[in-house]
Structure formats: C-alpha cells, structure tokens
Length: 199
Image 1: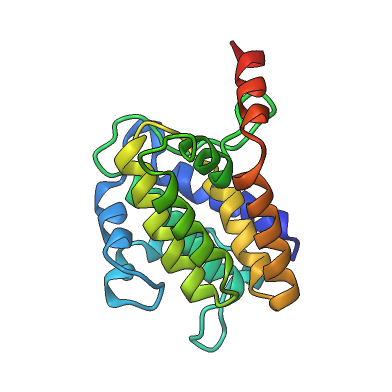
Image 2: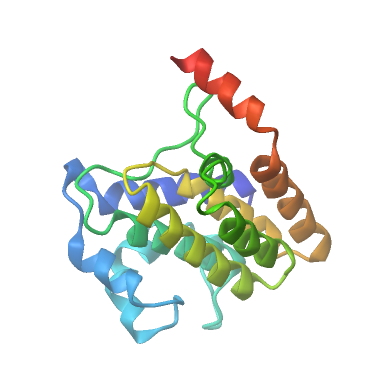
C-alpha cells in the first residue's frame, strides 16, 4: 500500500460525507463525538468509512491499522471543522491554493494576538512521535483554526497521509515533523509573495 492511497481514500470518504453539498449530519456528529475508531460512538461513521477502505487497509484482529487510524483521525478533523458550516471546508492543495494544514497555521501565525499560543501548541505537537498524542494536539489546532477562520478550506486528505507515514517509527515521524515545521515556520515574506501572485 502506498501513502498516496491514504490521501485518495480520505478524499473519497469526505466527498461521500458531503455528497451534493448536503453533509451527512448524523455521521459527522457520530465521528465528532468519538476520539477513536473503536469508540462505540464512532459506529455511526463505520458504514461510510469502512466500506470505502481498501481490503489491505482493514484490520483483521480488531486493532486498528495505521491506515484506519490515520484516515479516521483526518475525517474526524474535517467533521470538527465542518460543523455549522454550509460550504465545504475540505479542499486538496494546489499550486494556486495551498491548503495544507501547516501552511494555513503559518498564515494564522502572522496574527500577533494568537502567535505565541499557536507556537506553544505546535511545539507540543512537534515534540512527540506518539501518534495518539499527535492526533490529540492536531484536534486542538483544528479547533483553533475553526474559531478564527471557520471558512478556510484544509487539505485533510494530505494530513491523513502524513499521520499514516508518522506511525512507522521515530524516523518517519520526525520526517513528518520536519515537513510540518518547514511549512509552519517558513519565512512570512514567502507567504506574502505567494498571496501577491494570486491577486
């Protein structure tokens, strides 16, 4: 299984949850209230999530696979962000519109009112290679994005891919952290220049 498969499947699931711009509110509520795939409250999302996972992504012993953990977490982040929103808050990143999560956080970091608090949250996240701690930190960051820029779209499928890779060991987790850090701490002038090109 390739890491890109994780992005593809996550994209497919999010699109199914928002078919014809009509969110599946029951399924989204189910996943928002369940931190893990094994939670009884998560069962409301199983018919959509599990039906769309490739066979090799599925657990055979009741312990979620790396793919299940990563995809579930990313879809849950999307559900948290989508709550109360009419327009879709998920969008794959593109050259014209960089929507990767840490690129969005880098843009938020320019706001002096939340700069220090955001830095603290990101440092906590980048200091751990434990996937459950990473997911917990990311969920807090998603809530911060939602409270300040609820209309922003995020590439949650790419975030699923990163979480999948990070579970293979400390080296892989640190590679993901470096990538996130590069996006988050990049020169603010780079952000302003890229915005200028879009306008």
